[in-house]
Length: 442
Ligand code: BGC
Image (cartoon, rainbow, N blue to C red; front, side, top):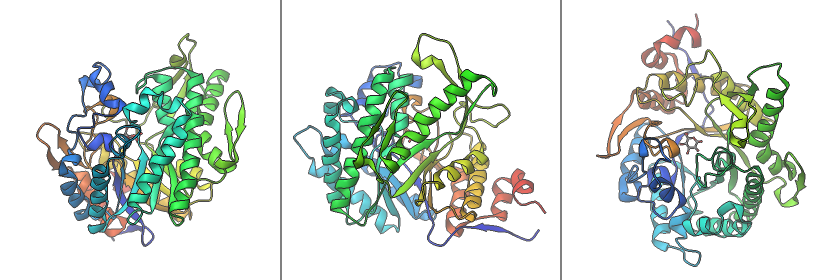
């Protein structure tokens, strides 16, 4: 067979994404540390512990791995509780630690994208009600300014908040994340404060670094009613879609926060994203269930007939990924896929998932959607929040007890994609032969 390749534009960013609490280890001053210690909150009673020991210096070897495998970008997050361990103190050593990590990326030819908030809050902020308290708007803005001042020489791409929709859904609807509540009124308050904090930080960062590009990383999931002709399923789907997928990006476009019960206009929110950061894993079905408990009313499940990961967490729906990119394109801004990936300790499903998603990414690029980069989640297995260590997303396998890493085949597949800036038929033949007839039919 003649070899074929699906090539990406020159300068396309290829990387992986991580977050502070999931990889650093020894994070004891945030709300997750307490949550983990409560026991029973995390699958198998997992603890983040040393995580991937990045705070202890293992970031160096992991960044070497990323660079050697052709990655030219990396998305990481800053741990607020380290930068500001108490309300009246900035920790200059911690800031310096991040400076070194960022320089470490640059020295390896890797472009950093830095997230300022990825689920973890300093404990002192939690004591004040965290994002329920509107004080957080100024506090987050000051913290953001401090970080941007310190790192701006080497960072141009900023993500203010990672998945505020997940923070709210898990912390204030299902209760699987701290603070473990199920309260629609509070959920809406938190959304409002998060939206305002993003906008305030956006403006402050622009004053400090006008040339920076600032965005949000939004978890996008395609939702469809489970029973297509059931009115309650249809209404529930619309309700979830509006709040989960549309609320933040719409508010940062026209300044209107559209809550189910009211609309709030705030001019500071207008046009406050320079790019769309899209985190896509999979799409799901929604149904309505009569229940006294708010978190039970909305039922979410994987559709029938799709291949699903070991713990039923992620399913392989590449066309839905294309749909999410099409959705992102409506905002007329550059698009970064800030996360995409799957758990898979066996690394068989992952190779199919990765290949088919990169294939759809390439199709979207060919529709001229302004896609600038792609970050696979994640570089190495890390602490997977409420799933603890039971869910393995890494290109490299991690033994969290010994800190040993082992390369998975997907790492080689992804390395070849990054190095050639293309998905090549010979790689598909080698790593996922079963997909050759589908992707390269002759
Ligand atoms: C989050 C990551 C998480 C990943 C896999 C995303 O929603 O940003 O922190 O590890 O999904 O669940």
